[in-house]
Length: 336
Image (cartoon, rainbow, N blue to C red):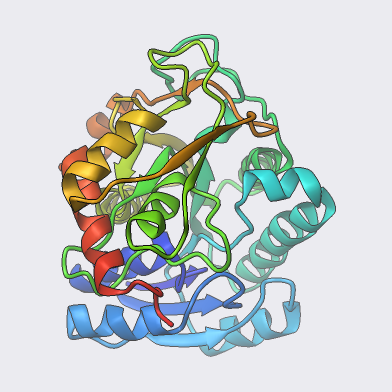
C-alpha cells in the first residue's frame, strides 16, 4: 500500500511513519514544517532502514496538492496536519479555522478528484467537550470548549457528510487522548517549537534545564489532588492504532469512530512524580490560574478499538516517562 501522510514530520506523524514502514507500506509525507522538522523523517529512515518520500507542502496550497496526487496513486491518506494548541486557538481562532478546516477541505477535494477515498483522520478527545462522566465512550455526545476542539469536531462532521454524499468513502475518525513518550531508540520524539503547549514536553524541558519551571494550570479542579486529570497514551501505541485502522479499511466503506487511550487517568502532579522517578531530576513547578478551555477530567473507554481493530495499549506511564526522558536527555535542544 502507498500511504500519504499529511503532517508526517510532526510528533505523532513521524512515529506513525515508523510503524507504516515497518509494516511494509510505502510512505509519502507532506508537511509545511511550521511546527516540525525534516530531521525527524531522516531519523525515521535510520530507524527503519527504509526510505520515504517528502514534500514541503502546505494544505492551503491547493495547486501543489493536485500536482502531488497526479504524480502518485495513493491507496489511503492519514491526515495529521493541523494547528493544535488549545490556548493559542482561543487567542487566534480564525487562524485555526482557516488552517485546519480549509486545509482539510482542500485535501478531500484533491482526494476525490483523483479517486482516493480512504482516509484516517487525526481527531481528538476534545470533541467530547466536558463529559458528564468518565470513562468516555464513542457514543458520548460531542461538543467543544475551544476553537481547536471545534475544528476537530467540524472536520469530523465534514467527513461524515462526505460519506453521505458518496458511499464509496472509507473513513476512520481516531479520537486521541494525550500522546506522550518517544521511540525507544531515542532518535525521534516530541520537539515543539517555542514554549511547549503540552504537559510532558514542558516537564522534560524543565528536567533537562531548558526551562526554569513548569506552570501547573489550576489546582482547584474536582479531582484527587486538584489538578487536571488526563488519559496519557504512549505515542508508539497510538501510532500502531493507525496501522490497525488502515487494516480495518481494506475492502470496506463507511465512517468508523474509535477512541485511542489507555482507560486510565493521571493528574498533573502524578505525572510530575512519575517523571521525577524516571529521570532522577527534581521538577520545579508553580501553580497558576486555570487555562481557558481546559476541563477537569478526561479519560477513555477504548474497548471498541480493542474489539473491532484488535488494538490495545502495551506501555504504561513509567515507560512513557522513561522514553520521553531518553529522547530529551539525548537531545536537550530537540532536533536543532
